[in-house]
Length: 330
Image (cartoon, rainbow, N blue to C red; front, side, top):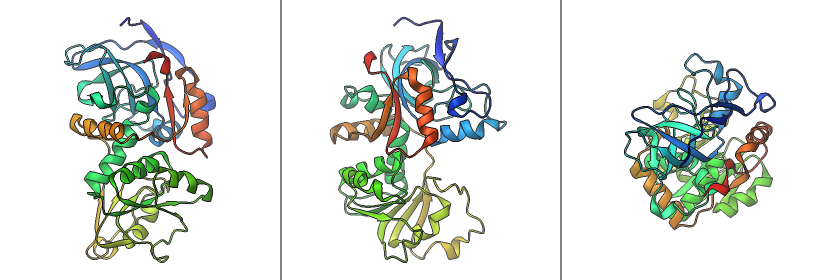
């Protein structure tokens, strides 16, 4: 593959709303030992990247200037000494990507071998748009369901805050597994899509689901500490609650008393999506391909329209995931 000397990218140095963002010409990253150069073919837009642009960029631990993007898919163009093959289809995610080192909002991305994973044969014929919607969103869903909740086919799963990209992925995986899914949302208009994804029941969330009689074997908390206590109170004996999201804007539990606040015979855990492995990515991508799961993509943008994608992200109100992908380079 021919490698350009310069590339288009979207670096930021301070608080950056969509109207302040721009694609600019920057040098293609120089190869170094232990890192491989990837031609970026697509990526999803994540809530954490919005948080980075709107506030976290001011933190001392953020490298500046930084190219955002905590995930991506693409092809190896220069493997250096990593052992990857030129042209291999790969995904990349987490581990400081888009914060400690430049991320995927660019035509090329230099990635440490520990954060690169080959896409298994079962999924290699999927479109770049589909592949781009999988890595971070579906990995977080997968880890939350199987590592955090130990989900089984006969379980009833409560998905708290389901009408988001992660929530839709969770429902699709759980439905394909055979679990019964109760999905919550604040917006009645989102109920049809939640059912289309596989939710057996959709509940309008008033903040007090336990009092309303909602019960489940497993609960995935995507709103976060704001509703965590109520979600735990919805658990059946032996049930597990996994805290994964922070959509409620509350990040910690104040005056949390585990003896009193975790109901007897129930369990509380969490999932931090910073530790993917090749084995898990193989299982995940293969599951998506074998079960014919089509990620819920609100809109896909070509890379040249990345700023438009950021504007839609800033405006909110969409259903599903925003994806940037160039299908012309399959």
